[in-house]
Amino acid sequence: MEKLSQQDMEVLAAVPGVLQQLCGERDEALAKVAMMERRQAAEKVASAMHDKGIEADIPLDTLIDRMEKAAERGELGEIERAVDMVGPDMGTKIASLANDDHRISGGGSDLERFIVGGVGLAASAQVTTEREKESTP
Image 1: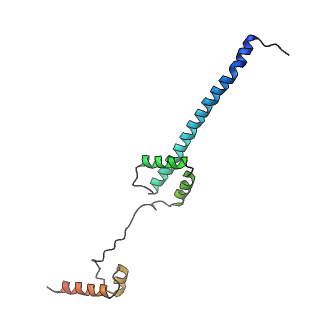
Image 2: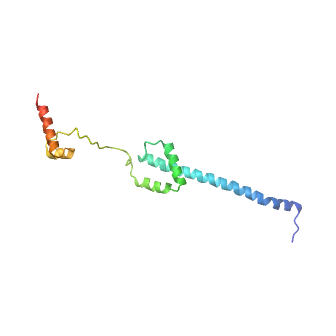
Image 3: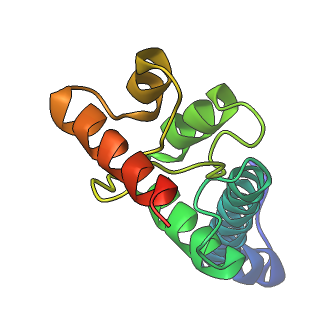
């Protein structure tokens, strides 16, 4: 067996500390890379959500933070699949319904009144009353 010099012994004694330091630096770099990848994935999902009109009333930065928190909980994959299922502009509000009992259209036939929402005797009586008011000078 070879005899080790004093210098070789010093190098071998320093190896465990250097390896631990390198492993710590590597783990730190891997954690930063994982955080950056999670942020990029969250930005991608949030951007797709805004493009499709989902959560459009929330600022993009806030939505990205929410998606990043969802990624930390392991839910971002499910959200991304759900966003992929949504077609373009499905989240955009294009119409609304209002229940306005005071205004009934004076459609000419029962079918028109049914479609507009004036169904029943009360509705036709109200339409008749409105017509009488219009015809009276």
